[in-house]
Length: 285
Image (cartoon, rainbow, N blue to C red; front, side, top):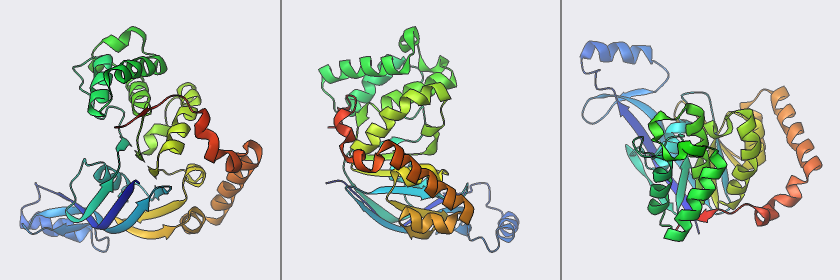
């Protein structure tokens, strides 16, 4: 059974150029009342990106992270993914994890698209036959044609997004971390990518999603944490937290849109069984 536990989690980023006392004084004055700057044990000025966060997730949990830009959402996701080390507290993770945080995450720009796909398969513990099928699946979905055998460094941003998306969504993890970039591709690509993404979300035991979209949060999440200046301001169901976070008219519009979609498409009834018709995905070892 998959699990994530964060205990008094804090994440600081040292400001290495801020060692002069005059600069420190200026920075502390500028941040007065916001609580985002401090000093660590080595007397360095640090940005306190995340401070004292506690939560536990078990199989079936779908956590949405909301908050303004700079609130700490992406920093928290990157720490859960192992990109950043906690400055305080600790994280416990049980289960195979995949993070959709950056289109080029984990890719070697000097290798071809095909070689990067193979490396991802090896890293995920897939057998040779599965890696061969993974290469075919990703190459076809990303629609890179002959570019699949050229170095990734020459890819356009759109090609990189398609490759990163196709690769990340081809391997089904127990724990899925997602930042909202994954929902912001060009309209033509996202039109056919959404079904693949929703299948992956349904198949994951735990989802942690950062998004500014109340519609997406209500559709995919059963729990929401509102991050504000690096701390948890509210934690509860989507309705409980979003009703505090959004102006009343925006919350009402988002709730009405979700209700209408569920009534039209039967999402509330069919979602638990939708994975049965999902396209093939490769289970992480």
